[in-house]
Image 1 (cartoon, rainbow, N blue to C red):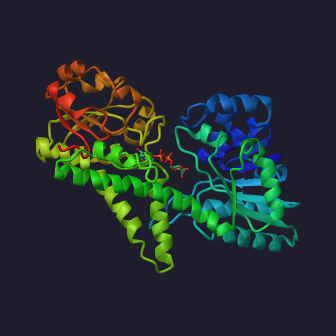
Image 2: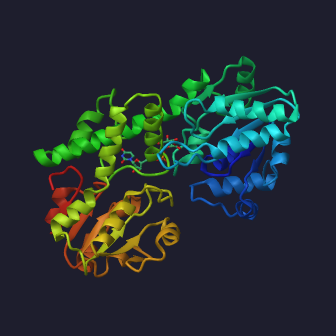
Image 3: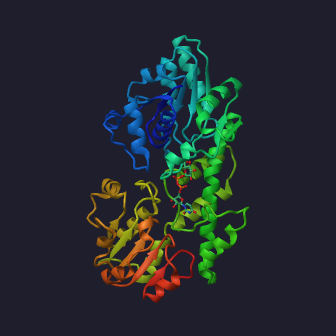
Length: 441
Ligand code: UGA
């Protein structure tokens, strides 16, 4: 099938590459000329396991193409994906200007029936807006061309995006037209073979499903972080509690890991956007507000431990930081807890020596101007002469470090662990003071 994808961001690029891989003819359109040129040369703008070879092989085979020519894009596919960003505007609502701009572009250039598929995370009611913008644009052209708008949210996780897209747990399709369902079945058939993963519903329910899923996951994390704060004060170990409750299949083990707060481009933004949506219709979303509050304070957990240990004035202190990305297997630092940590330490006068296996360029891009951040080539180099070690991301190669090396490199054997990587008993036997999340520090 011929498919056009507007927006070569995370969602657009992965979806396009995966659709091309199964044989569809995919043209990606983006306004960013540099990005398009880079992609043609094989320079993929994001770090995502498995993505580069997938993009390259499909580009070389001609099934995956990149262009800035929107008109060419509109003419190419019956299916027109909108996968552009929906960044938060000043009050946290999702800003739909890029989505509506694509809708307008499609309506300006289309000459025959199109199925417009909202892939971006968009508030309930966006499909109606897309439809209205397109109708208005077509009227201005005096063109009477039929089109459909479908909500088909994406549920991929950064770091596992290719696999999530190749083997989706569900394909949510919101539409009011049964004929469109057949087209989507054909499009997704290669991903939907062994058992039917397509969940059909009305458009508004599909739009809300995306937010509800992310907000539910964020709620699980904030709930667990709240329990970790209680565990800490009650002399319990949250890791034991986690195992104890996760074994109940109704609760499950996923997304109940306490930590130094959730980050990334999705949870913080989507929780906030759903809060704004609720408020805009006069509903006070108390639970979602609490989820956000708990997360904000959780990001201050490590700085609080550090100040408890060293005092509020951190001038002259240096901290080794392992992990800058908001989670492992990505170079993404959006809303990462490492940023709150570093900014608080800098404000208190400290210097940070940081290492991350993938996010060094990103850190350089964001904080390259600061002389109180030193980006170090290895995790061992980050330790040299530091007053303590802080861990913000659970990269695999932080899990079993040489503790003797850590001890001899640090001025004082103290670890502030935002991801509960080590066994508290074993680590204190090695002579470390160990601050972890919800483990009686
Ligand atoms: C999230 C969802 O998991 C995806 O299903 C969704 O499609 C995506 O948002 C999106 O809307 O595009 P992502 O932001 O890539 O995916 O990352 P997650 O793996 O969900 O992690 C988010 C944050 O939660 C990370 O900072 C992670 O460290 C934190 N987390 C996760 C915890 O603190 N505890 C946990 O138990 C799990």
